[in-house]
Length: 191
Image (cartoon, rainbow, N blue to C red; front, top):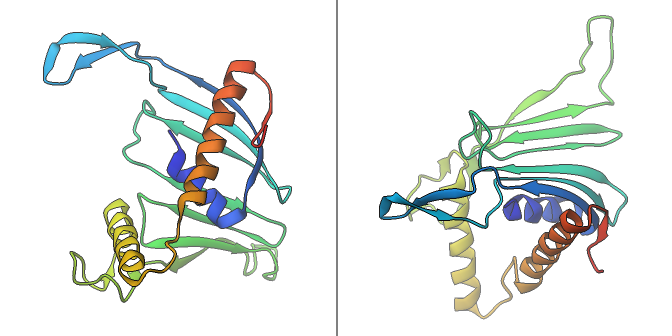
């Protein structure tokens, strides 16, 4: 769980250095697909909480849950820095929220505060597959765009992005998280 968010964090902020993870399974038996009257034991996490340290010295948290009450297919990311912050929520996909700490302050906030920036996609490709050229962001749109870019790279014999190395780096982070949860300590990604 959380592999897509790990990949996104790495894409935006760089490689992971180490991780501390706690995880658990709350629902130990689940209905057998196709036969809901029969329950089967499962070996899958219902939640995982990670503390992260990146190679660039940044720190963060990642929370992944199958059981969060009120959550659908949520994916939220916030990045806070010394000069500002950005926030994106996939359940409100048409807007990116940005805070610029250099904005003038005043007794009632001045010009400071998060500003809403339109984030509707206006990509030229692949507009004819399903969506109009300007459409809201979402899992479907991003998966179709990823497939399009992979097919285009294969057809033109150019390197694909992301590539195998990107997937490998995410898998190394996942494996370090499992080790961390087992050892109950921080684990280096390249350990």
